[in-house]
Structures are given as structure tokens and as C-alpha cells.
Length: 294
Ligand code: NDP
Image (cartoon, rainbow, N blue to C red; front, side, top):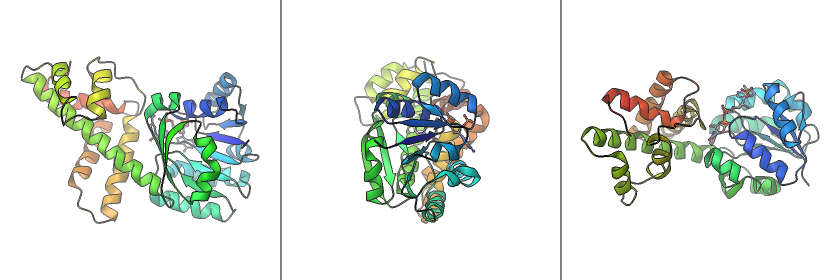
């Protein structure tokens, strides 16, 4: 059985770590805010480490699930690196950026530690159910070594290419998510204002060519109900879409829609704050239009 350390017990990290424990892997957890790790470790019966290096010391697989790649790099450089042993693998489930992931991978290579970027999709619900899509960048033998651990929380595991490819695919997926949330929001606010019931409109759209995850799941469950549960912060979607826009710029690919939706996410993030959920971005469109989707 591989020994696992899990660093970063945020909204999605917690259910992922819980599933790893439930699959029978010996698990040590660490979180920057130690109180969160203490209560969580107690709840699931995992060990809690005082420092990230302590967590890594006996681990074959060290999973990071932090906000950004720069946070991962900071954790690596500020102590984690001292706890890593040759032959271990750092599996980074952060939705990261390819350039920083490549830098971290090169740094870890000095210690004969492998790096695989492995961002996930499927939300907190998918993490709870163990049905996440996991997009991986790195050497295939490195991925294969840690695959049994990923199986605990992932259903579809795809090797996308070398280090950074998982991050790149994730960023573009997020740009598509943001585009469909924003586009569906504009369509439904306009329809609501023109007198069409949004639930009737969604019934049509979801049996037609304009449907998406946003129209089929997010709007019925979170917008029409006005529930707006906080599962994935708008601040993180803003970060993701800016990574996508940067990739397009770096590759000199004209991508005006991606650049626009990155700016819209930054605008909504600035207006709604750090704790707002990504779907709450729709409320910005509603404010502009002085109309609600309900
Ligand atoms: P949260 O904001 O809920 O949690 C962030 C976690 O990162 C916390 O454990 C936080 O520690 C830790 N952290 C942030 N910065 C640092 C740092 N500099 N040093 C150490 N720890 C740090 O985020 P989520 O759990 O929602 O997301 C985690 C990653 O997964 C993100 O990259 C996100 O984009 C991605 N993701 C999230 C999904 C979701 O539905 N929530 C879906 C798919 C991907 P502390 O508790 O101390 O603040």
C-alpha cells in the first residue's frame, strides 16, 4: 500500500482526502491553517502532520491541492522539499499553470522526486462520489505508479502529455465553463426581461443545441432555486481563465472570447469578493439588467 500525504484541505481537498482514506491508504494530512487539519484528521481517522515536510517524510505520494501553482511552489520551497525522499511522487491536483509546474518539476528532479500535474474536474460533488475527471501531465511511468491513489477519487484519468499538459487542458476547460455560464446568464436574463419564464427557456435549451453543463446542471440547481451554494470560488475560476488566456497569448493564438471572459471573471470577482461562488457571477449580469433569473 502506498503511503499518502495530502496537503491542502480546502473545499475539494477534503472530500478527495476522505476517499483516499476510505480506500485504505495510510494517510497523513497537513493544512496551512492547522485547525482545519486537526478537526478533519480527527473526523476521518488520519494522522495530522505539524509541517508539510513532516507530512512528506514517509510518503510515497504527496498530493497538493492548493489555490495556485505559486502556492505549491511556495510550500515546496519553504520546507516541503526537505521532507521529500528520492523515489517519491508529488501529485499536484491544484488547477495550476504550466510554466510554474515545469519549474517545480525541474526543482524536484534534483532530489529524484517525480512531479505529475493532475488537476481535477467534477466539483465537490464529483469528489464526494469519486467520479472526478483527472487530467495528468508528466511521464507515463510516474502516473502509472500513483494511479491506484488517483482511482480513489477519479473515474476518468487521462494522460495529457508532459508536465504542464494537465494544467493547460484544465485551464481551457475552465474557460469553456466560464463562457457557458456567462452566455447562458445573458440569454436567460434577456428572456426573463422579455417575459419568458427561465425554467421554460431552460426546458427548451436543454433539449436543443445550446445546452451545456451550465444550462443542464448549474442554472437549474443553483440559479433558478436562488440557492447559489458556495462550492467553487469565483476567485479560483478567475485564476483559471486567466491561465487559459495567458496560454493563448504565449502561443500567439488569437482568442478574443477567452480574453473577454477572463476580463469578465476578473470584473465579477472584484465586484463580488473572495468568497463568492463562480455561479454568482450571473448576479452581475442581473444587476446590469435590473432583472432576475427566477
Ligand atoms: P479552497 O479555497 O477551498 O482551499 C484552498 C486550499 O489551499 C486551502 O487548504 C488553503 O489553506 C490552501 N492554500 C492556499 N494558499 C496556500 C499557501 N500559500 N500555502 C499553503 N496552503 C495554501 O480551494 P478549493 O479546495 O476549492 O480548490 C483547490 C484547488 O482545486 C484550486 O486550484 C481550484 O481551482 C481547484 N478545483 C476546485 C474545485 C471545486 O469545486 N472547489 C473543482 C476543481 C478544481 P488554508 O486553509 O490555510 O487557507
